[in-house]
Length: 417
Image (cartoon, rainbow, N blue to C red; front, side):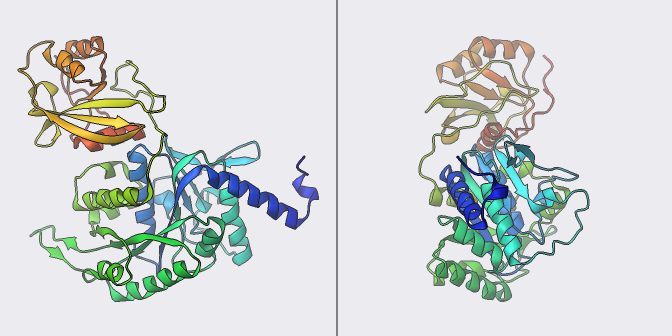
């Protein structure tokens, strides 16, 4: 029987917390510490957007902000006001951002005044970080992304000691003043035996909005060359994009699943490399509840290895506004909540009832469309295919990923026939 915590010694409390930490970490597959040698390199932006994109791929993700003096994660995600974790059975439940993305930050615990300074010494900071792991009711996760403050102080050291299998994702800019501090971070990781997942070069050039020429504001290839010299994986270059800055200030990240800008394309490529480096297999999956614009037809949501095939009508590689006038259909196959492959098909002539039957024979379970008439929707449902209308004109993989993560923004059905 566990003693009341008020009556046990500090040493016993520490042992109990150690056991709770081990239990929590045992059902988190991959832990990634996002760190940098110096501030101002966009480390928190990379951490937040990495978590969002991973969740957009249908993975279960936790995002923990241990930058106790300058927390940025809640504002980047738009978690404003008095958003605080709830409590259950003496455990705190992190704030739910997406159905499969939960977030915890010291700012969420500071009450209404977010501008108060956090004036803590090392032992208090160490205790808070350990509590973030032990006293939080983290669900089983595919990834826990940990955003740490810049440098090699108490916070990253505590993570290294508390989460022994964490891997470091090091963020830098191309300029030498940043690279000099990043080399210290690399040395830190090697001293504490933390595996380095790779290096990300942020703010790597900017496209001129007038002529389209790339401008190297902070130099070029610094992070890439450093990775080469240190025999580390180079995870990619993220360009400086003023629109990303504006969206981050506004706390809007839902558009990151598409390829609308060089930044989002580079970000998705970086996430591909992170997944390839960390993940082997996972049987977890996420299927969101129906939203407005979806039919009530159920699709398999549970089971070990369910395969769900999504049909997406395309024009020039993106969602066609009307499914009956598309150039091709993309059939995107998912397994265990993850995209496994895509096949392109030329549709038969558009005649009433032909496409629902044809897609049913191809094995489609869900069709994601822009516009669709009510009679066509009925025919799809009769063919056993779930219908989603009013989706944005994004590439098929982005739409499927957004659906699996529960963040697909469905608009009005543009078809009225």
